[in-house]
Length: 182
Image 1 (cartoon, helix red, strand yellow):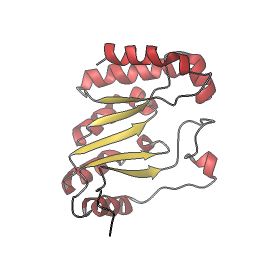
Image 2 (image 1 turned 120 degrees about the horizontal axis):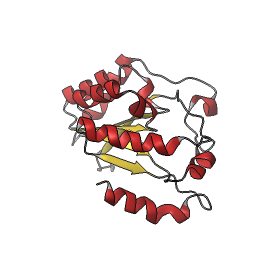
Image 3 (image 1 turned 30 degrees about the horizontal axis):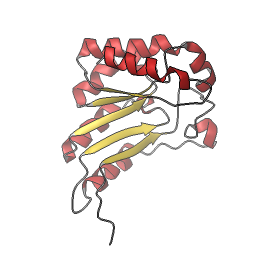
Image 4 (image 1 turned 180 degrees about the vertical axis):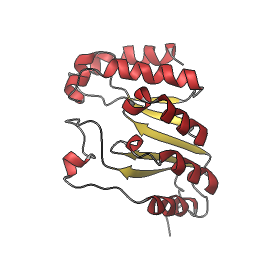
């Protein structure tokens, strides 16, 4: 009863499946050894539950995971969130499917996607080799930005996993990159 702060940003993990196997990740199926993937109906119930918060309903929602873009029904889930009155819907993503599948990206935007919450550890492949166990990520990140420009999405949050000795010296470059791509 003393808790008076409403939920500002609801976060729903829609899957723990992922198309990567980052050594720093705690959330994907390889780290947990079981698949967590609520049904469409369960997720709709979760959306309704966060909208029922009192005294103020939650107006912002992030779909997270694992990698939420592995769900083909994600555009429909975004629509469901919008139907309940959620005014801001963001998707937490590594960007792989967004870079490779422009049609899927457009479906997300058409459904009401507000923001991409994009994994972005830097602009050097060496960083991703250490944080993400793969070295082809910089072109993927750049392709996500290019695709966003093409379809008209103008809200992307660059989400840096800051790792001492790996990308801590890159923060200035990341900020400069963000400013130049604003």
